[in-house]
Length: 226
Image (cartoon, rainbow, N blue to C red; front, side, top):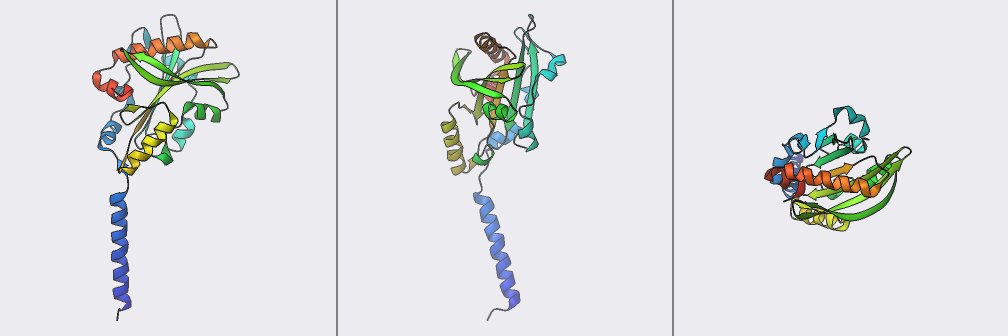
């Protein structure tokens, strides 16, 4: 006959075993993601490349579209910069890194963040950027607020792969989680204040190409996936 003390000890052992097994089978961040998380975003993106230089006086131009996500700790790192060329044209670079891109904590796409910030979002379409002879799949969209027309180009990495298609992005998340690992994610957003969309997208493409040329092989692997 079991005494109350023996029953209590048995229950305690069973609870400990259950907790240990649950932890053992819980999806965990991939080792590569843990290593990448230790690298500050500032070290990945040069402050000068091609005709582009940092414009420290223009920080107010960047609308904090990531602010809501940052408040809820959806990202581990956020980098926001404004660059300017010799003609005075400004391009804003916003980068968000999340160490754990599980289905329940996925990167917020700009079309979602901007709409939540009061912008009207339109002209969402897939595209490509040519960088160093390779095509990178991107998404383009136009976000507008009174007095602020903002064409946007962005791409997302899940682990080491650039994925533009949302269904494929989620499928990759699910398959990685089922395999016991949670991939990290990086979102790179390039935008400018310009109501001439073809002109804006052309300069954004030139900006991305110049940036890619300035990256080291290790930086390109992180930012472009190759």
